[in-house]
Length: 142
Image 1 (cartoon, helix red, strand yellow):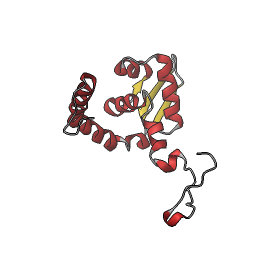
Image 2 (image 1 turned 135 degrees about the horizontal axis):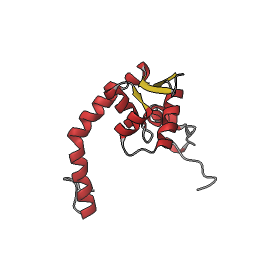
Image 3 (image 1 turned 120 degrees about the vertical axis):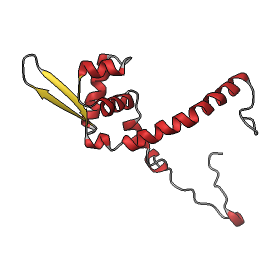
Image 4 (image 1 turned 180 degrees about the vertical axis):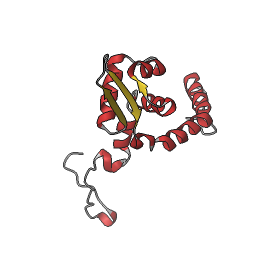
């Protein structure tokens, strides 16, 4: 195939479009990288649901995340402007986290995804079971 020129209609050489980057192919890719990276959604969901929280409270409310990963994700979310960190210089020092207005603007997206999941996750599970069991998932099979 190397060295071959694709042919267009009527036998003329066709011009191929330049390769486009992932962001042009899927304009929401950067948003997906920010919002849906592992642990980001549970952190934002928890801060939105419970309000201002200290690190230990947030860690407890999320559950299975390690302290190291929670620290890393909170720093990234603060950098992205989705979480606000407030340091209180008292003894002992106190740090609180809350979702920012920018982070809160994602609430309708999360609500839509929650609604979608309640309607469609059972269908996804049935499709997985059918696939794993070798049965067709629907009228057209696989």
